Length: 246
Image (cartoon, rainbow, N blue to C red; front, side, top):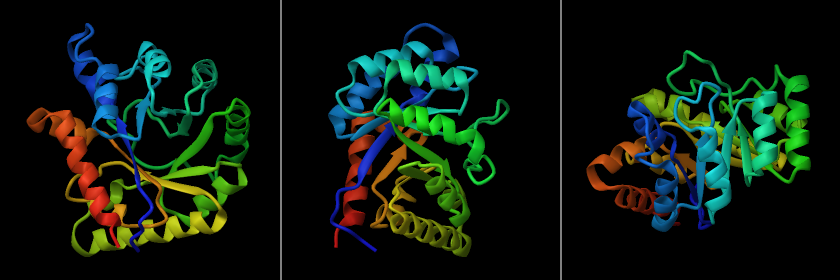
């Protein structure tokens, strides 16, 4: 299951903005955190501009687009307003995610199979603009096949159920991720994964040879309170690299 191919690490900086927005003002600055993450070895930065702007705001996306020297992965709901922002700022990639106002965090994957007609035009417009599109989905064969049908070159597997489980249930959830990543490989889709990954849970997912990238945010920002962002990212990088050793 292991691979010598380097596994990319995308660092999600949303919750630096959550802390900033708790009191207003400009501190702590998520763009500064993005630069620190890049210096610590992150391969990309992820930021989710939610409809209610609860953490990342429009100016953050504009600044990240201008200033970053590593790829920006712009997480967005499939809406006309978010499409317009993506087309204006031209991030390296856009990850389409489900979004509900009441949720604390993204609680599951997109229902691509049930939304083919709605999602296809968004994917086409983003792709024509040179933006690499990914779809955040559960590790389910039906959803991966639908992602292929709508023309998405990348999927990101939701790892939350795996991270939240224990014992044999966690092992079953990991098996689902392994099978889903293999299906993506067979269909010619690049596979990423993320949501809830920590030092404890990252190893088995990082060891899956058919996964090219992990996106990790909340845990790293929380760990940074105790050890600093640089140290947290470097430790995650070590664990990912160890999992990829043959």
